[in-house]
Amino acid sequence: MNFRKREVARRVFAYELNRSTYRFPKEDEKSPTYVLTPLGMRVNRVYFVGALLDKDEIKPDSGIWRIRVSDPTSAVYGYVSRFQPDALESLMEIDVPELVAIVGKIRNFEVGARIFVSLRPEYVSPVESDVRDYWVYETARQTIDRIRAMEKKEDDDCKLAWQIYNPNLNEYRQMVKQALLSLKEGFVVEGEEGEEIEFEEEFEFEEEEWDLSDILKD
Amino acid sequence: MEIESLADQIVSQFGRLGYDVDRDEVIKRLKLLVLEFKVPEREAVRTVRNWVIREYEIPREKVISESPLVKIEEIKKPGEWVSLKAKVVQLWDSSSPSVSQVGLVGDETGIIKFVIWAKSGKEEVEEGKSYLFKNVVTDSFQGRMQINIGRTSEIVEIDEEVQSPREIEIVGALVSIQQNSGLIHRCGSCHRVMTKGICPIHGKVRGYDDLRVKGVLDDGDNFYEIILNEDNIRDLTGIDLNKAKRIASERLDRNAVLSELKKLLLGRYYKVVGVRGGRYLLVRKVDRIGGVEGSEVDRLLEVLA
Image (cartoon, rainbow over all chains, first blue to last red; front, side):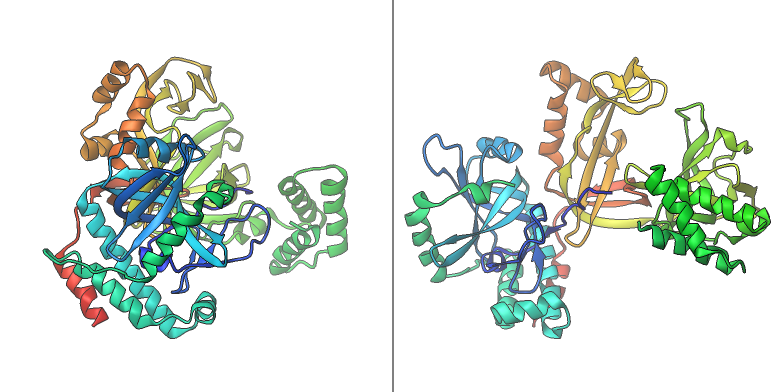
């Protein structure tokens, strides 16, 4: 058979996603793009549930929309264009802020010396809060599994993640804990500070000069 | 596959039976058939095997008894001779005069499609009964495994009841709804899904409406292709066939049903119970997951502490 196996949609908190700056070299022209997360998982597609905070057309009439969507740990950016007709159609019907589920591909792109992570949604669907609750729980569980695998240092991708990111596992444990606590009634999460703000400024500033074709195409 | 490794397969197969087959001769014959005559690999292998059987005067029974008894989950490659004990789970309407019976058989490890060719001259099997299918050939059709029952195969009814396949339970998010979902047309005679009023087998025929969703359930580690029938869809969305038809006629668009189902179903979590049948998970029961228990969250928090 010469069809490619479908890629599994991984569950990753925005905090881990945004730090997934290493992209595996492609085996051949048609092979899918994988990035490595700091906790040693190879990711091509994700299923993400969070609050859609912004949707802005990057230039008037460009037909390219930038979205910002946040889970309890952090916010992640995404780009939707006419190459993703299903996502674009539903995005046009959504008023922000709204709780959404997104299935999409993860994309890395470079701005100057920095590498940013974004999502390229295949669809964006408004969902109920119970979906978000289950997603946070499930993503916490799978992130804990990854932290354990990182402790063992057996898996090749984990070894590579140690080499590239040398992550502070306690930081990730803390992040997962915050996410889980957010499910408790009346609990307010603090989320990330510092890095995020700087990131955003740079993002806004150089946007015009980007070659977006890389993030938007298949 | 390489000619040499095909040849090795044949040689080792007969080697196990105690026959020392001339490898060079096998390679020569395979090369002639595959490279010169452009015969498909499978046909070439069959032809050479038959030649070996004649040349070395190997009794038929020996060859038949040789095909190993396998479980359905072990069937992964086409073109292998196997035997299996299985129960007839479902009989379908045969779509072609060359097929005597077609349907699904199952054992405790899974379900697989079977085809009994008319030429095989076998007696018919009955739904719910268990049989020993001896010396059948594995095959792959449109990406799915199946078994073919031909002339050299045997079907023997057995007294023992083969267990039904283990049901599995999966909790995952519905991450995709595929084409040919929603309000569909099925062929009146073979129940296949028709596109633009045309059945792939019977051409332009009168069809009937049906409601189904072909989707992908993803749990973050694996994905499962599932099919939801009208009952499942009604339980989850409140849309049954009549309501679907109403939506289609109100909006003058059959695709409106698919859009509506996508809106209601995509991106949510479901618990599905069913059996693996080749490529698809055959769904018996589906429920929406409504949030998460506080105790489950506490358990994870303890792990982190």
